[in-house]
Every structure is written in C-alpha cells, then in structure tokens.
Length: 129
Figure 1 (cartoon, rainbow, N blue to C red):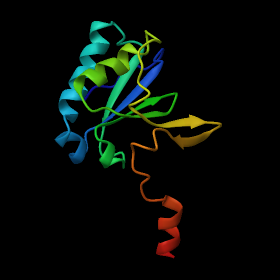
Figure 2 (figure 1 turned 120 degrees about the vertical axis):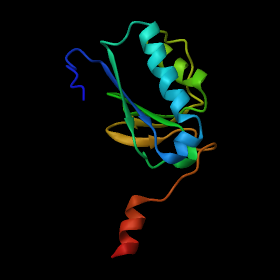
Figure 3 (figure 1 turned 135 degrees about the vertical axis):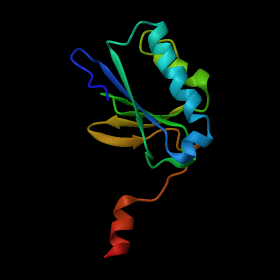
C-alpha cells in the first residue's frame, strides 16, 4: 500500500465508487478525473480518493471537492474532466452539476429543481427515538 506525502496538496477530490455510482460510469469518471490531473500536471496539487457510498445515490456519480466542500453530480467522464479544468480555468461552468455547497459554514442545496431533497437526518433520528 502507498502512503502519500500530501504536503502542498491544495484540493482533495473524493470520487464515489459505491454501487450506484459504479453503475453510472463511476470507474470511467474516476479514470478521467485522474487522467486530467496528470495531463494538467496537477498531481502535487490535487489528491484523489475513491470512496464508498456518499449517500446521494440518485445524483450518481457523486464527486466531492475539498477544501471548498462542493458536491457535484458528475454524469460523464467529460464532466469529470471539466471539474479538474475548472480549477485552472474559472470560465468552466459547473453550476448545473453542483448539488451542495458550503455557505456560512453550513451545507446548502443547489439546483434544488433538478435534485431530490432526500431524507432529513434530523427527521430520521427523531423517528428512531
């Protein structure tokens, strides 16, 4: 197993490889993101991790970028590549893919007209009591 020295890393990209995301091109999206990082020589700046389920299966394939904390619905390899391009080119528009973003230290849903609301964690916990 590899232990990376992450000093100098500016972005951490978490790519869901749970079963729903894998059925929606998760492997191809993962490879495209990693390839775009390599092409743009951003290996020292952007680290990627495959995750299991991120809990937004209806938005598959889900990709989360930190430190911003933005959650994206990446529907193709090309959108995955655009996600990496956007870190060097501010004209790349990913607004249609953005599903959550941090605002005032709180997660806020974006594109609520296209994405399902989902189950409230607070309501779910109350129902268990």
